[in-house]
Image (tube, rainbow, N blue to C red; front, side, top):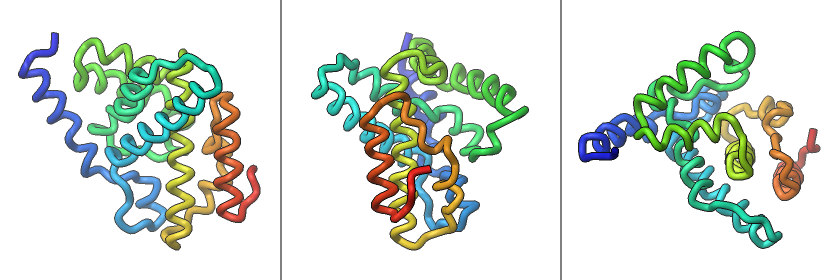
Length: 187
């Protein structure tokens, strides 16, 4: 049950997302990088664009679920901060996954945990859309930062995992366009 106390606890628990910067940009010299909350907002917008495209193609997509997934996908970072790739790989991955699940369970109302889990498991079209939107937004941000001549972002372009498309052809097209605009080849 979501009562007044849970509403306040959830909002206060997620409040740090507005102030915590995306660490991957900080360590690469970007001044005033986007916050985790700004990233989540942009992922939600990117996901809406993908939902609209997929609906135009005749796909049935639960748009509300997509937005919920997009807004909640980085919930644990309110406590952990943004741990950049590739630090999340290897031995840290399992420990971090367990920690993130515990944090999500503490911060989110009960019924929202299933939504967050769905993103983590990528077990639906809606979760795949948000997974793709997460990387797609990041690469658009990298393009924008590079156009503004901020930071040293070359390793973003070289990392194949930054081009995850979740088997959505439109996302493949977006990555191709991003690379064209950056004057780079799609890896």
